[in-house]
Image (cartoon, rainbow, N blue to C red; front, top):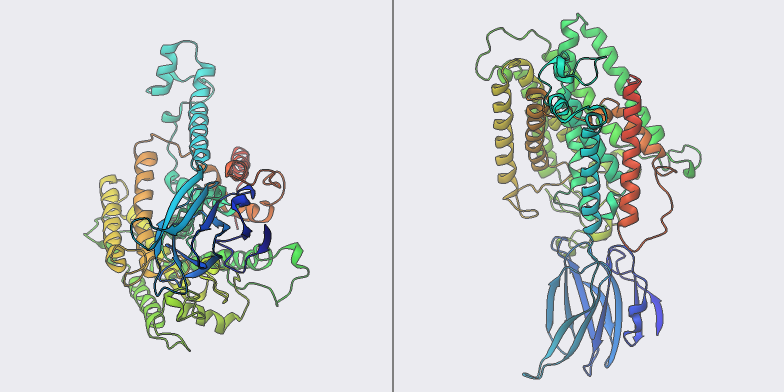
Length: 585
């Protein structure tokens, strides 16, 4: 048997074992890999083609060729469902076609032979080695985290209690006399802070997931960004963070206005903070020591902190110039909307600009209004059109100083750099933050009426959810405007805005209204978000946050390492919280 390197896409095939029998099963499989052996018992050569079902209208790609009375073994990816077909030169169409999701570590045999019933070739599928249970590590991790959470909650009471009745009274916490620790009042008797704990918890929850997915998410595809259209867990966290920025701007500026802080002072503070965020993004997070001296030739101009900094700056200007006024004592219906009509007018103009540029800007050698990934997608007709207008505008402004490995690169085999934090998507990032500002205005206008706050949160969630459903036609790829994190499409913002209102509303009810949860442990990173984000980006790939894995054939070690690294940052933020150290810029 001869081992030869594959010329086919690296996402699906790593190498092919050919010209031999089924001995290819001895090949070592790694995470998210399976082995398929095609055994050809026909008298002519068979060609196997494939495409991923997640790849929209993608051109069938050659997988392997099997000579007569021979076999060929191929290692494939198991992340997505694959559609395969078998063809011969003497037949005008494929005689076998099937779609299947293959399991990690599984060995499969496809037997190609003439059917005994009709004189036509047929394909018989056999599982030779059962695949791993890829979700078992997740289940174990979830049970361990659940056990540890219960232990952390119950440990102080169990340790200090003298008898069962006192323990129960301490848990119920109905009066100071039931306090287990006489040195300080029980939690329910402490004066409530004016700061919304649900907002810090939401921020910390988003940041914790962001750290986990940035570290690798255990290697699971749904903890990584979608190849192009669609949503995964990794696609949720940055929009949530932008939403929280908008809510924080409104609440913080309202507090500073009541303390007598002037517009000029606010402008200085906002400008300084924006400049620091931009410099952190340019000089640290886009730079690695292995790249050598700082050089414009490789510097990525867009970036996450750059996007967050610019979005914060625009939202702050909107609030400083058209949002700093006293809330009327008698609140009229929809007053949280009508009083801010200049802001809404500017947002409508901005999003109209996004729509016009996206769907009306002429694109060289590409169809106007193109929203696809290019490459082999859309039947391979537009290989260099990745991102349409968004990609073109970024090329005009930044050249090649953009993200060179977009999420569509492997599956769609694109060659163009494309930046998910580009210029055109920043417009809808501002819209996402503005929806967060609306949440902050609701909290201010209806302070003291939790029913009104939660009711308006629910109304916004429903309205945005219906808008997303209409824009996408409830499909991943076939809608008017598909949900796409790379483009920050309008449907992406409405969909994630709906999720944000729902999640913030649920946390507000559980934490600030009912007091059933104190937001721990997410409240700790939520109060030190800049430190955790910059720290995990700079130090995340050094020990003790990560290490060289010794086991690469399953998700076990990678999931443990990613959870370990994430937990360390939660621990660091907890220790800083105890020391009352909060990094602010």
